Image (tube, helix red, strand yellow):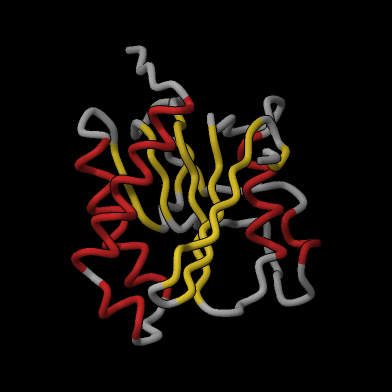
Length: 157
């Protein structure tokens, strides 16, 4: 089973899904709902764009084991574990195929650990090897800030 999406295709499909989110769910963006509500709706729209894959929110497994990122607990004094629950992932369940990992923030929440997670999830010598990572910071109805990650590094525009 080989799924071939170019980076450009992935980014275009994400842009389509986020456009649908803005069109259909502006209430969520304007009224300071929890990021999980926004992640859920965005995941629904991403699933339409990636019908051959699984789009999951807060997915906690790698195979049948708990999803861990070694060293992530050091990113914050509040973190007591290396367990992680990415906001959204696009993958094929029960395989090693990982296409996209997404972390979402709303308003002015701290993003230090999310950025570190995306670097670790996309590194070529890590356990997950996601093709791309995406950090989206929503600010009500303004265009969201999107930062892309590949091979353990943030891509520069």
